Image (cartoon, rainbow, N blue to C red; front, side, top):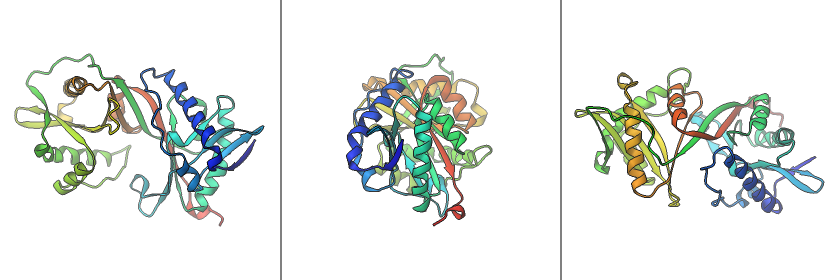
Length: 310
């Protein structure tokens, strides 16, 4: 096996491998839709941060990155490499060996480019490759799960009202969103996000088509859920923010809010609901894994910049 630079000549083969790997994951998650919206692969050739594995004249794998990312995972004065699932793939046999050799080569590129945080997205059931990255010093980070847009088995909660908030009421969620920020600071997460202001929230909602749903006990907001509409009109919606006050947990309230969200979105013709969360957020993982099927995960490694030989 030879490891070489990823160039535009490999785009066709790379696209075929991405589709092949995606179909393999659909065997574990049958409602995962077909991969019909791949980004322009030329960007991965142009930035010269990728490699391809060649064997007997055929490409058997590739591993590329987006351009350098500033402050990955809120790390000050750090540059990161990030390989989304559309930027890495390998043939079905000897996958661990292929990925091991590709990472050894591409990590040298990334390190010499000053990229000390290495993040790679993999399919959740690709255990052979995940194990190889764990052996190379990576840890699990983000998780993506989905479910059909069907209500979960949960009872209504007496005295709790679930509604979708109009845009002029989005700012009412700020105390809960900032409580979530505080939650991320706790062990075992230790993730530092900035607290939002009304101006921050307005600016964010002006950029992206968020929707907010909330649960109320009397007139008191006790939970919220933020949903991001898929821009491609694919019938797929993503939960990207959720919090329930600790004193209300264990009563089925969040299950009721989730069912309300599902009912509203399904009535609009949506058929898939996705959520992403950190693997080491025990509260989020414990809840979402009860009702959603894991299909993708991210692994990450931080190298010592001082160890890089220029």
